Picture 1 (cartoon, helix red, strand yellow):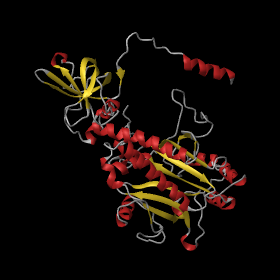
Picture 2 (picture 1 turned 180 degrees about the vertical axis):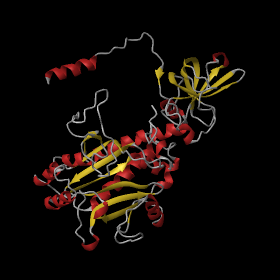
Picture 3 (picture 1 turned 120 degrees about the vertical axis):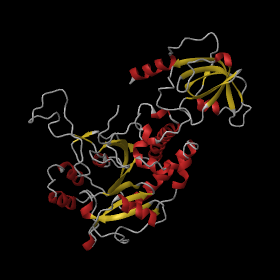
Picture 4 (picture 1 turned 60 degrees about the vertical axis):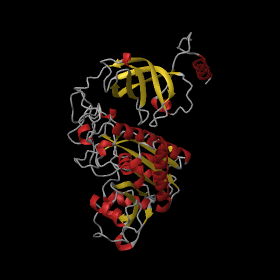
Length: 453
């Protein structure tokens, strides 16, 4: 402990940077430069990529963006600083004075004293064209370059802010963040759509296995969170999950991100639904406040969750048939195009861990889905079966008792009523932005027959 304190103290007072003799230009991000209210001609340095070039007889105009904001910083320079290397897409370092702009379009501009081209860009062969609004389908061909466009830049900034907002919500609500494993021997969903892992570069011997048991990429962190909920009353995880589902639909990916939470001492779906609704609203409000220019499409999707009829009470479809995407979208439209909670599904449609409602011939479980406009299912969750004998029966019927003996143990040693939910992060982004295809809200989409980069 003493050694660690000494190390931290040493790091605090040491620096690898030499003391400059002259005060250098202050390095600013484009976002910070645009936010300066009172300019006093201070010398600054901005680094980024050229978004536009316009050369006149005596004046050179550039727009430079570094990804920190949707808006670019206008650079005004003497025409003598023009260069053939100054093209759309080239990377530059600009030093000069930050001054008040005479234009009403921006508050400040950078009066350049020096422009240094860091990396050239051949605008003729660059797949992204100046002043051309490329379709998202076109940009999908270039996962290594599409982040340089305005639309993908906005989506990725929103994604970053939404990630921070989700972590902030759970931290402020007293949840403990758990890193659940990516490699697992469990099939949480029971659907069998798993990526199985094998060691590469070795002779495959059928009788041998790296982990001594079959191992897979995780489809959910739920079961591991349930373990942790026996020691912490509120836990969550946020990480990648994988499904080997052979689907090219606009709402499916082979790799995607899930927010999952488990709460102990919960015995009603209403309690879970409140947390789900608060998470959705808090995250969206934070994104709106942090990225107002990036989320103009978001406003029409903000509406309070409408807690409506149960699956049993509002029988819009044949009882016992699972809801398909078109059914989910119909329900949302039928209820006024607002988020809709659907609860109490037939037992036969849900996994073994859902709590039995013991409600007669309909035989439902305490499950809940939150359906949203344009997407369908966004959240899925429910109460877990905490009663040992009920769970033992369900596992025995499915011939899973031996595999899930550890899960039964959780009910033997200090079990409590508990429940949880999961939210697909990419579907959330689709919902608030109105993006039609899920492949456009993740930096590097993975789907059947496509794993670029």
